[in-house]
Image 1 (cartoon, rainbow, N blue to C red):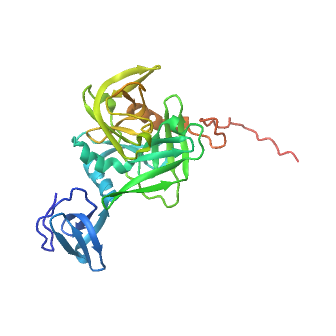
Image 2 (cartoon, helix red, strand yellow):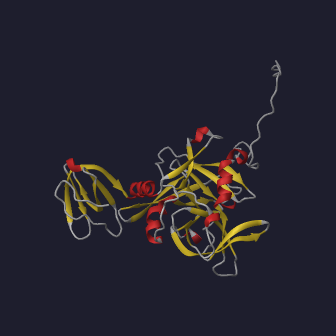
Length: 324
């Protein structure tokens, strides 16, 4: 909520495409486009007027990416899943949205969630993916990175009303599930910042006819948004159940998120019927949760790229003496 600030600024507006938010003392804030930053003041355009804010009244200056992350944190209090199987990955590996989270329109959700959706590039092609936590762990399809060792991830941050492309080259394969068509990747560039991430929902709670939307890079067209409805929750293809949607899915969308109107990931888009329209399919998010909860069982062995599984050495009571 916007309030009157202590520096006698009256009505605080919200620009159509906010570039930054200035948080002021007294729990007030101003959202608009930063025109100039000086040592003693910030000049900001809020759409119908320009404000000059003294520096001593400013608590924080948040740019678009930080605003999106903070908005998600406020709008979606989360239930944390503890990564007991892999404590090195942190105490909370992915998150789920609170039951009290309200539905929003697609335009607003895209502004908040868009920076969490990435483009995954390999020498053999490209696909999409999405961050599940701020530390650079992301989900995509297995077939996007299959037989590939050179992987890069391109992140699209919204700054000053424009998309800024940042490419990260040091990407490690953490886990693979060939039969579930899922892959877990991690960005390990030294200069990598904290990333905007998205919460995982429950496709079981969806009903046929519910509105859903996808964000991805169909045919390389980054940050493309398509909207549709859920056609069925239990479409069987080759022995697996998929979500079927009228949201347009094309090559390049693979590995991207399918969202509900609460901003939760309910599926991972992975294929379409080639000679049909509005026949897209997504892996239910419950399969993603199972994959993440058991990621050690699917851990990728970097010493043997042809084998996606890691097996521990059998226990031995006596170590053989080294041969002189």
